[in-house]
Length: 252
Image (cartoon, rainbow, N blue to C red; front, side):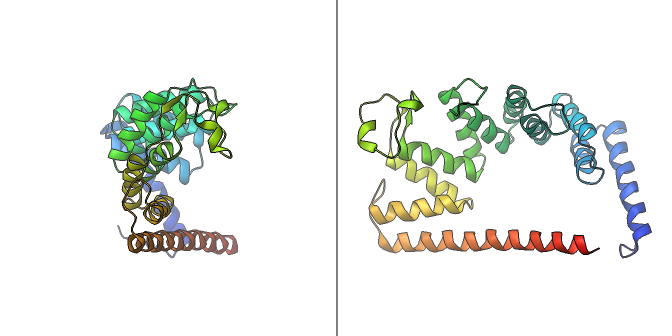
């Protein structure tokens, strides 16, 4: 049946039928990718975050679908569809998603384990977190590559409280889990840039300009600066378009 999506009644019918198809594909045919679509449908169309969370959780644990592990991990992280947030539970699902080769789940697990915020309820484990971030970067997650570059640019102290980013000379005698290494920082920054992270491109530009971790090259510095600028413009345009769409929706 062809739907006229300009007509409100036919749009409603299309959306309802979509939900029926997703339920059939998930519960009867037991297709993990369709179960994930059902979760997305319950989240985005029905705004039923509690049911969506249950679908994502089941799809992660029963059908071992990495993207659903990432979703339910995010739900636990912010308390979406739940009574409260649970960072430790979120980490469990991120690690599960990473085992199932979902790069962004690896990223989130790595960030939680390498974090050192005062409100963090996760025991800091930099080596384990580093492994997750590396797997994420190798899985082509640009943010993971950028974060790893940052770890090598400044180094990762054993005791974060001893580290003073504003007075580098005071950091020379503290113990590091990951020592500053501009060559590795450059490698990860370049990978992040190639995957589309504008901040990674900016770092590559600066490192070429200064000759940090790579031979100084002003021409390449300019090239990567322009790439960073273009990515920034594209990012701003996308935000503007989404904002305009929101305004258009409000007018309806």
